Image (tube, rainbow, N blue to C red; front, side):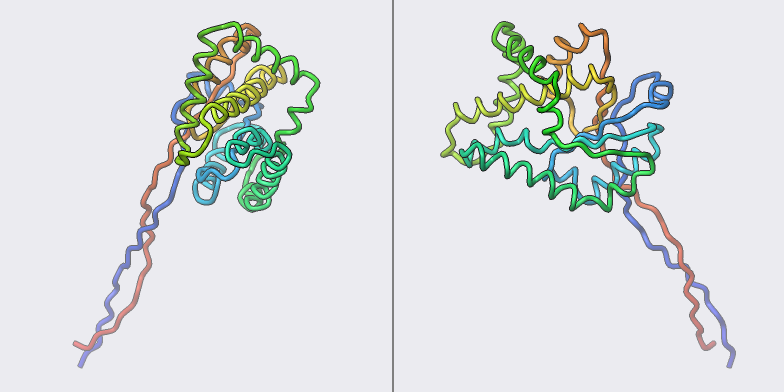
Length: 249
């Protein structure tokens, strides 16, 4: 009787989720040197949680940017929360708590950032001394520029269509969505541009309202903002392990 040792290679497939920028400017490598990237967060959205958010952080670690500012868009949601909850004060605190919970829930992933980072909540920008000026500029454009107003109405209607509740007041929902958009666009476009921010990463494409705000408020300042939408892809990596088995011949 002889003993033979058989070596069986066991292949285990590991599916890894990876994030990538859907597009980058031609001179990307030059632009990112010593630059800060804004990681714009919508608390509660699935792409800013768990596996997808971890993949986003891993992307930023290899992106070449020098710093990351994590912008938690929380209290701006008070406008759209009112569509179903009505009370402005209650909705403000709901939105604020959403942001706090998001940071606590994702702190372990944020700590994996290999570049220096800071976390900012939305109220920081509402209290900025230049915010009211830019909000007034957006309001004036909405009131006086038909193409500007049309872009905002398009984005607001697109948002309202997400609601499945047929009992909502559609007119009120659109008005609240418009307030949300005006506030968001005033901060993200002219205010952040004035402060020197140029790079924003967010999973989705720029909204039509955001695009027209960029064209009407940022370009006249002779500034540029680069928006980096994301794509996620699951890659399968093989991991080998050797198992030893003995068999009687």
